[in-house]
Image 1: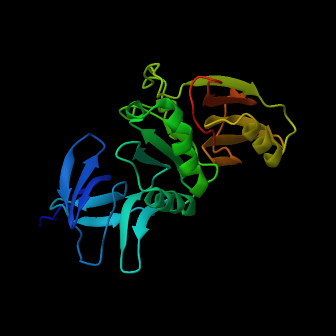
Image 2: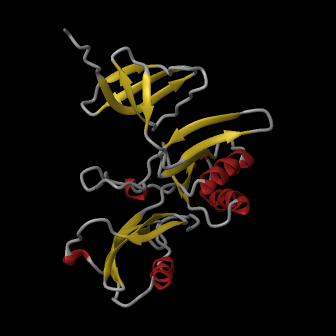
Image 3: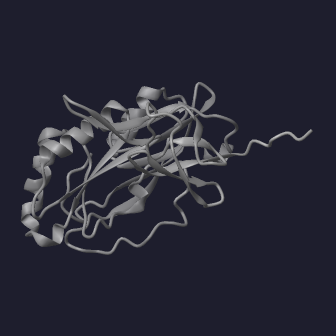
Amino acid sequence: MQFGLKIVLRGRVVFASGRHYEVETADGRRLRAFPKSRREAFACGDLVEIDAHGAVVSMQPRTSLFYRSDALREKIIAANADQVLVVVATEPGFDSELASRALVAAEHQRLGALVVLNKTDLVPRDCLPDLEREIQARNPGVPVVAAVHCDIDLRLLYSGRSTAGALRAHHAHPGHDQFESVEIAVPPGLDPDQVERLVRAHRAWRVKGFVRIDGDPWVVQGVGRRLEIVPARGGVDPALLGRLVLIRRVAGAAVGVTG
């Protein structure tokens, strides 16, 4: 008697259009996929299992869901995201209300948010503060970084993966914001609220590291207004405790609004 072998492949949704999806597996293959029923809908970022025919048979629980909606319908955009980058242009201008709606949706899902003010080479430099204030007026405290060709420092991106090998030179340009990495020592004995005040006093755009709270290791990580201070999972090298790496704007390097 022969028994059928059920083949299940795991991967992440990397393309979604209507009922058509592409799933990328761990070995880099991209496979076409489709839902088993009309009621099912997936988003880029979903972690799924598909059978040999491409049908999605299961999906892991989502850690976040970024979507947009109006009075008539809701459209899911991305799942399991950590950060939302809202890119607006200086020319021909941008819809500040639309940008604000995206930022509100990110805030609702507790996602880190960053506004990239792009094409800053197309307007006089003295116009940039007014554009940034326009964004800040609707979204107080949101980080805004000026850029040309969307060229931003990759250290500003929120990621659990190391970016040491991915950093690229941030070319000096009147429309670019420039950043520096600094390391600060966190003395033992602080509680989470005190650690948060210490980090925010440095006006950092990106922070990551470990501290000791009540004798146990805690993870500190964040981008923009989002800051997480939570107990560490697993062991932490004692040499890393009490050290935080911050990414912040170089003082006087360029115009910009700090978060």
